[in-house]
Length: 469
Image (cartoon, rainbow, N blue to C red; front, side):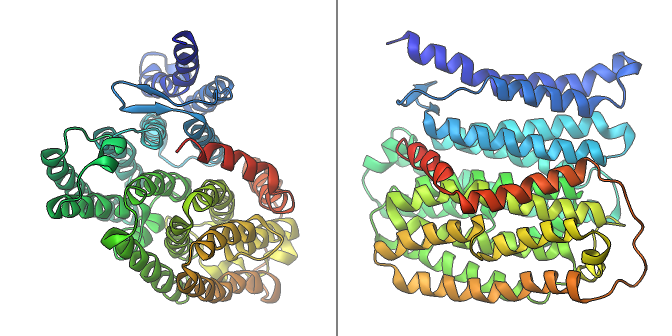
């Protein structure tokens, strides 16, 4: 019995440990070996691919390590595979078009690996202390990555992200301090069995508010538009996929501690305010990255709706995360390909893309329609599973609001497609040979199509993982 958890833990933990070693290799080796300068991206991608080879199917059990601080199970294996896949895609984009100046390449990959390690620890955290430390390990590198180009938009993005993120971290640590004074242990299991005291509710509200900052639920979303717009596009794609995933998992753990009551009422209002505000604010956006930022906020609201679906809702969340990541990373990849300055392209800059590069326009349309939830793309099934679970649990009113706002979102997603196909370009687009970015775009476009047409395999994996929550 002892050998099984130890054997699996040794294999599973090899992945994040390798990322940490690779992070220091990217940072330090080029300082001592000049011939390695400029190769940090290849070192980083190679290390990530090797880490993926350490991945193996988790045994049907949950193993607790470090006094319950880290939980390894099919759930953590599923989420770690997701994290490594997101990291690999972002690394390919970063190699194809460097996100940082040449002298900062080592720091860039070091920070990116540290953030990925923080995400992996966060989704496997078994107590609030570990979750908070992992959250900071995820967030602090991203503050620096947002401004790594040292441009005015990047520094503004980093400053706003840091200030608001620090405020959210302060709320989190204050809530943890209150809960630590009331509960003998801060494991999620102990918190669920503890007495419901008024002061404890205040602690929970502070912790929930802190993680809502990272998930970008309204009104804790203020940092998202400027951070996504000013940061390098590769970093924006990583933030949209990774920070949201980590925050959603911890928020779900906190949500599941309560059976109704004021906490569920607060989540209900967070979901409603988020889907309504984000979709209406997205209508007025002219920049593509800023539009994707508000889209990210809206999808945080849809994920919050799925919370009310019970076990089926958590299955939907686990299916939703990779589906959303494929579409949003793909859309940011198109923005990266077309950008001419730090803030990325305007939506109007996509005019004439269908004529000049029809396959690229087709892929972007797939991403937009998937984010909008148009069948038969994967985004439709993600929303369907998320909303149907809430309906079955009796939250029909909440789902009606979410569906109406999803219909509103079709306008601004369709606007992107209309401009690509219906509006002529202001100037002739030069022909370019396909490269690594195009390969990522077409791979992700195929993913959102196939995950919609054949949603069952991914849904089965999500269902198996959700049983070990």
